[in-house]
Image 1 (cartoon, helix red, strand yellow):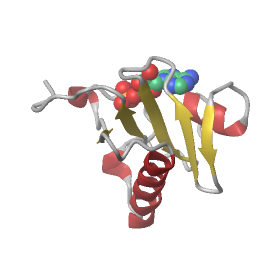
Image 2 (tube, protein in one colour):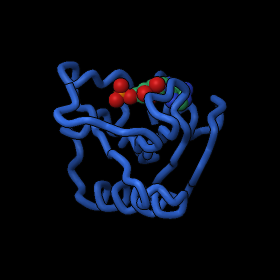
Image 3 (spheres, protein in one colour):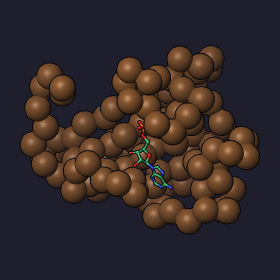
Image 4 (cartoon, helix red, strand yellow):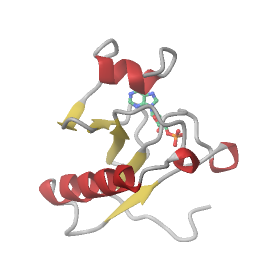
Length: 113
Ligand code: AMP
């Protein structure tokens, strides 16, 4: 846990969030500044600053598995959805606690810009 990390504060229950799913390793919440009609964040409970600092492949397995299960449970797999991981400043990562964005409910484009 990192005291100054907003996601750690949410995980500890010190900061409110709109919870969608939780288990012993992972939390899924709604993004406060949604970039699509559905914008969820899939967050490991362990404080890992970014994708480049993941040492245990189990973390990715848990996060990706939960992201796709939540997407299926919400019926998002019908029309499709996007999973995004921003890593570092050039990719516009703003919260230094690993998370996967799960975006759905509108048409996305490629390349993303
Ligand atoms: P990133 O820019 O990839 O690090 O994504 C961080 C995301 O966290 C952004 O989409 C923010 O809108 C979102 N965010 C920041 N603070 C909160 C919060 N307290 N609750 C929910 N989402 C948040």
